[in-house]
Length: 267
Image (cartoon, rainbow, N blue to C red):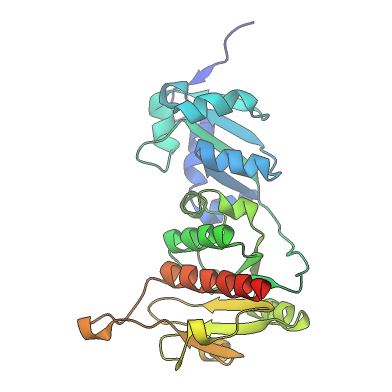
């Protein structure tokens, strides 16, 4: 059996397509997502995401990529080092990129104790990915991304989430859809906003709770602030601190939810 052809030309159709798919509009047009990195691909596959294509460059393989590549079941194309570095979105790629159909997630019906995180207008992939990672680690049940913020299945969000976007139900909704979903399931809504009088550890965060987070610059719009509870995170103003990274705020809120649930269970 002859060895598979190695793609070396930067003008090859596969190379051109992978470069094109770095753009969200192109991924949406092709109904695919691009997953780069052995850890992220492994989490996608273990979560049941079907791969439609695999691109590999053995010269760049990390030990993890070298072990994973032979176990993956998808049409495989080998790229030269130069060709792979052309299509990669990373400074030090590990030689694995996969394509998969765009996930269409239906959120699970919540249990009596459930936490969902609602993200309004967040545009930085690093923040969205970090929030997904924290939500997964803290045991949240789902995440709702509103409108045209950062693409939750974009390569940079996938990377920042370390693949948690595949292990945690993440749905994109319109504002009306999100409000209806939360209302019909009787969620208590908690808006995180710096001008709230109540601190986040004083708010009741058991039962079905939706944590609402907006951008660091503009926060939540007024209609999302009119919720069951508005909470703030205290800061040391004596040293000039007047803002907090939204991913850090989300992590604090999520772990306060987990703490209250644990205390309720112990009680």
